[in-house]
Length: 220
Image (cartoon, rainbow, N blue to C red; front, side, top):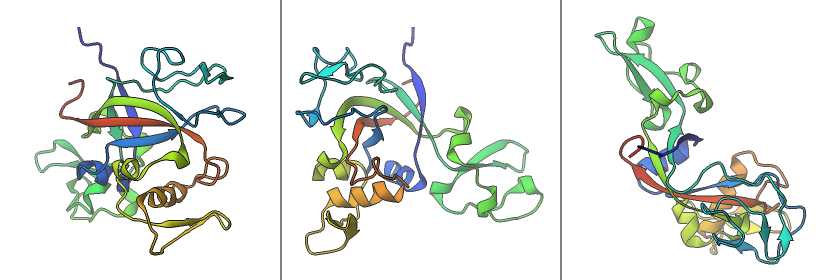
């Protein structure tokens, strides 16, 4: 009996490209609801006392009650099928196929009856991708909770970051300097996704750190 759980996960085009290129092995998702006050222990990993067997539910951590409902939707062993920006196409034989924004501008689309090139208006948002169109499968290997700004240089690289940056805490803006690092490159990318305070980099929210590896096939 196959007890593997398959679940969807959204990635933008840039992160899909990072996965395909083998640069991305983790992702961070905001924990909801956030704790009402800071915990003494800023970096939390799995533990039998405070977490359930999968390490993805927190009841108490270092004496601070997180309450109920903080459950990560993913657990180690889950297979995630990536939802990405996509579109339908058809072969000359009339068979349905799929194309993906992360691959760049695809060639002709016979479905529209001519050699129309793929333009922005024909792309379908990732949220609407059905499982049958998924081409990337990921196996969850570990989960932990962490404050967003506690990410390390190596962890930022594992997020697929290639652009370095610096950060001014006073202005809360990212810039380039001789002290650029991948950590702030990740912060710059995080804010570019539209997160507003307190979910922004300066808000330093608690996040789930979901580590994964590529899986060749669904459920395997």
